[in-house]
Every structure is written in C-alpha cells, then in structure tokens.
Length: 292
Ligand code: GTQ
Image (tube, rainbow, N blue to C red; front, side, top):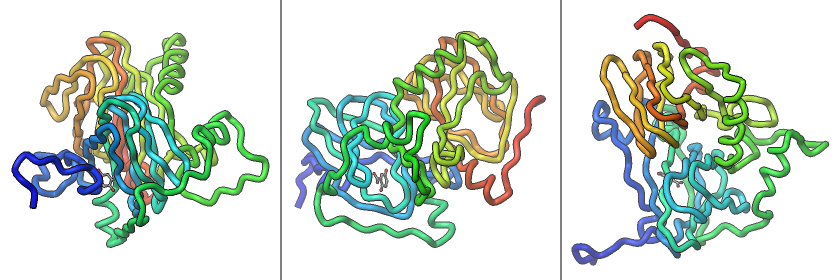
C-alpha cells in the first residue's frame, strides 16, 4: 500500500508522465484528434524499463541534460532541444545517470494506432535492453550526408535516433543569413529520413522553424492539427482568432483547418509535429495560405 505523499518511482509506474489533455477533447488523452502528448520526468538514478510498441514516439527535450534513451541497443544522450525518435516496434528504455531531473515532451501516434485497432506493446523483461552499438553511431552513419554503401532500407522510420538541437540550430542560424523568409512560416525545416528524404517518422511529421525578431507570419491553415513547442524566444500566436502568448517550453495545439498567425517578439525557434505525413500518404492533406 502506498501512503499519501509517498513517491512512486518511474520504475514502479513504468514511466512518470503528465498527459497533456486538450480541453476540446476532454478525457481522450490526446492533444489533437490523432496525436498524444505528454511530459515525461526521469529523476537522477531512475529507469523507465525497456519495452516496445507499435506506436511511434518522439521526444523533445525540455529540461535537464545528460539523461538518455536507448533505442534498439544504442544509447542517445539527451540535451535541451534534441529531437529523439523511437520507431514503431523498437525496443527502448530511458535512464538518468546525471544529477539533475530531466523532462522531455513525448509525442506519440496513440490515437492513430487505436483508430486502426493496431495497438500492440510488450515489455522486454529487464530494465535495459542490452547496449550493442556505440553512442553516436546512428548519427555518424546516417547523418553526415552519406549512407553505408550497401545500405538497404528496412525500417519505415529514420535510422537516426537523435537529431541534436545544436546541429539543427546551427543550420537555422546559417540559413538565416540568407534572409529568405516564407511569409507564412519564416524559416521552416522538416526533419527527414536521410534514406529517402521523407519525414523522419512514418506517421508523425516533425518540424523546426525560426522566426526572426519582430516577424509576423501571414495567415496559414492546413488539415494537420499541429502541436507547437517553443524552444527559444517569446511571441504570440493567433489561432482561429484567439491570442496565445508564449515563451520557452510552452506547448500549444492548433486544431485542423484553423487560421494560424505567429508573431515573434524575440527571435524564436518553434519545434512542431503533426500527422501531416500520414494524411499525405492517405490523400487527405490540404493547406491554404492567405486571407483569414
Ligand atoms: O516512453 O514509450 O508518454 O510508451 C506514453 C507511452 C511515453 C514511452 C508516453 C509511452 C511512452
């Protein structure tokens, strides 16, 4: 029996996550109609035991440094802003050997898997899946504009597990000097699978976008409801006529087909994810720029 106030460890609970409920979808454990979001906390010394599931997962690191997630036997150390993938049915466990709590956002396609009645999960039976690859191997092998000479694509998801923020941010800073801005998006990039140039995940489309200080985007809408996470800066976003002010680590959900406008007060970097890749494969996706 647990006494009031007694701490349940991440191991006992399997994982410690605050599910981000969308007030428009109350009780449904989803942040958009098709996607889930949660905030996961791993305290120093804790583990979240190894398991795998048919759902795809992404992590976006929001606090702490030096905790890790292991995917298919490769350990990824996680830093602020890193975008980490757990492909469908890949073994994964989380741990924190640092001396600080670590918090990241989890994004999963749980509602999509439920829609198709295709939700499967299993535990590995041990805290950690054996580590069989060097840390950094997947990024070196697939993330340096090269592929192994006889590479045959086997998985739907990207073979890269961690897209470090330092590299993505540096790329945005270099492109920024060109001063080419999309009126609706500022400078918006998508995280890709280097094996085919498609999105990094089979069902979830992840993006990173820079808005220079003072930039106001023109109205934009698309059928993929989008979760925005503020990596840097302050600003405000109007969604369907409602104003939301934001700062670092804030999370916003924009529903499908509602007009969105962003205004960056400081230079801002937004991570976002949506089901765009799934909609495009199924022929549903559409977008519109312009008047609101
Ligand atoms: O870390 O695999 O927030 O399976 C929800 C379900 C995280 C995970 C969540 C999960 C995970």
